[in-house]
Length: 66
Image 1 (spheres, rainbow, N blue to C red):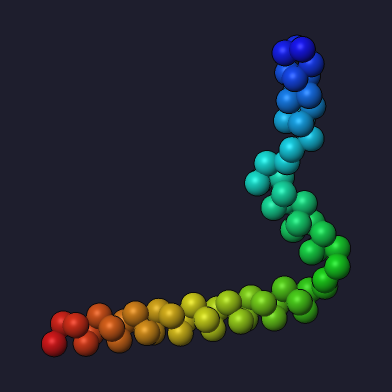
Image 2: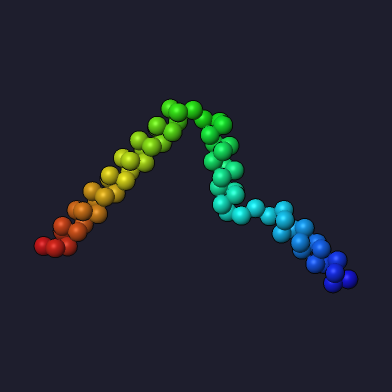
């Protein structure tokens, strides 16, 4: 009976996907469904958000040094 459970466990482990594999699969699906304009738009939004975040962090650091 224990041998059967081990076989079932091995089958389950083979069918599981790692986080890396899942991310790659999702990225490939996104690439198939979207064009260059989509990536430009999300890159622009990400850059703006990062700049705003960095600006806020710099202001906080400047205020704490006073």
